[in-house]
Image: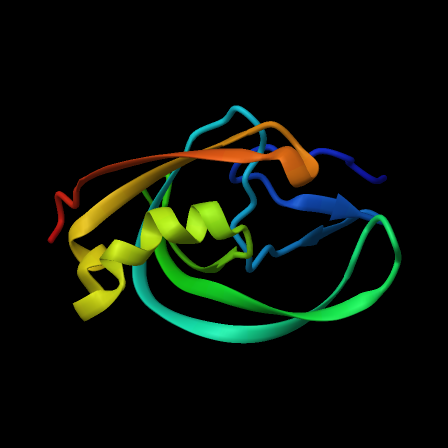
Length: 124
C-alpha cells in the first residue's frame, strides 16, 4: 500500500511499512507550528526538477524540537531565499529559541511563498 499524501503527524506508508520522517514537510495552505532548538548552514547536492541537473545549494537547517505542539527531533531545511530572509533576524544569538514560528506554504513549486508568523515561546 502506498499513500501519496502526508497528513501532518501521520507516518507515510511505503510497501506496507511505516516510514519515520526526520524532516518537517510543509503542505500547501496548512500552517505548521515549529520551535527551533539549533541551526546550521550546510551544503546539499540537489537535482533540479526541471532540468535534471545536479547542483550544490547552501541550505539553512534548523533542529526542530516541537512540531505542532508535539515534541520531535526533526530537521527543517530552508532553501528558498525569501523564507531564509524572514528567519535570518532570529539567527544571531539563537534568538529563535524564544519564539514559536507558524509557517504556511502558499502555492507550489518555484512560485511558492511562505507566510511566517512569530509569537513568544510559552515554554521558554
